[in-house]
Length: 401
Image 1 (spheres, one colour):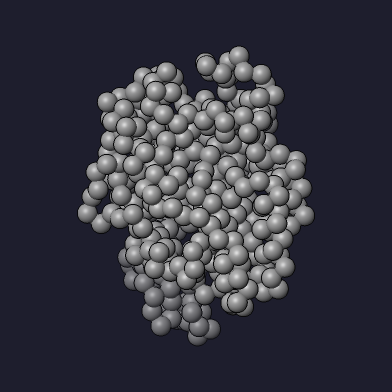
Image 2 (image 1 turned 90 degrees about the horizontal axis):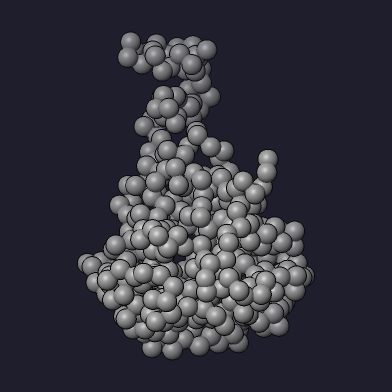
């Protein structure tokens, strides 16, 4: 198999075609040269009226920021390009629909101290920064990240660490934000070291879109820190196969070789990845990058996200379209993060037809029915005493055989 067939390196477009390769591959250069204004965007791409109006509003809701690397993946001739829709604001973000809110999954009500969200008994979310390399237009924490809404979040590491130390039931800490990998190496190393020193903390995770927005950040020094402090588990966030570049694969390889197990969390987005063939391409490329598809999220009810949200039934149908047609490793769990703070709830296709005292009656991916006995006596009934009706015989015979 030729790897280049699946992970192509895109030619650098103007105005960066003359940028030295050493600069382009420097993550600090990428951050310094992010696109952050309407004027910069208009020099690079022909915007629609909706996009132009959205950019004018961005500084009141969620800042505009796109790394040159990620912008370079946009097909500028396609107004519906899947990369473009994720990072260029649209006027629809100003339109709040019924049920939407600034804190759709109820993090504020589960926050005992600033920066800590403690929703599940044995684990916490530790928000360590309010900045990202680029801003997803459907961001659940748009109230917090970029400070466009004057949220004024300032992480208090001491308060967060003290809370974790004082609660011995906490065995799992997820670092998020913002993006933890925007912290300096020294600060990240110190934070991970402090968490490792807490005896009851067994499991440390990082949620990051840096490998996708800024793969240059995954350098040897960062990988040394993650290996030293490991095992550190990491969830990245890839939504479309066009994001799976040779640069992202290289970043994932480096993380994997540093001992970082990788999973992916996608958000189901209208016009971006809500087609079976697109989702299948994505999950197969993820596996080729050593990344396990983990979650497929229904888009949260964040203010101004209706134009990107799908009907949840689409997600159920998509998962059903994958089952039996690809390896089980490739199939993510479709979940809804319950509005108001109920946590992640799996939303699965209905493979169970009924449960009786003796059997579970199930359908497989082809729609064929099967029975599984619940008790030893049920097995005997199934094999010896069960006399199927005429309409049952066509699907019970495989079991009796």
